[in-house]
Image (cartoon, rainbow, N blue to C red; front, top):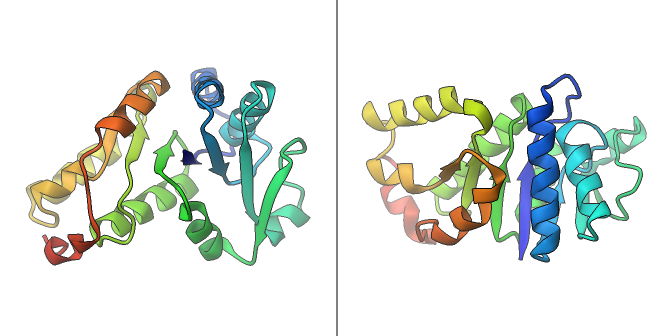
Length: 191
């Protein structure tokens, strides 16, 4: 199994977020799940990668050349794919990916998460999406997504495109129980 993880590169965050990233790396390593991620060496990206490496797991960084040039890459990740730009990076994240997990993050993480939800709505990506809502971090986004449904911008079925968990220990069960989705979702994508 391969899972794509979206998460923060910021170091200026509370330790609870780092602990969750580290634990997720341990869980995925124990379960022999390969991770693809943004390749960063700092923030939650760095902690996730370091945890995977320390636990004997397999992690692949996908990074645009310009980020490599400014030395954002994790120093101990050994499997890399360098791409031309951010758009190619996001497409490459999802190739051969069996699920997406979003840990807390900033605007880059939001953008990646909302794009993959949009792709799922259109039937372009049909695999599980899990939002890890550590200490209510994603509460405002979850409320906004529900507001989209309540106001008719999305159908109620679109609320089943993703699973929400509070702790990384619940990520694998969420992936397993994720509602089936298929490529003809575009038929009802308008709302």
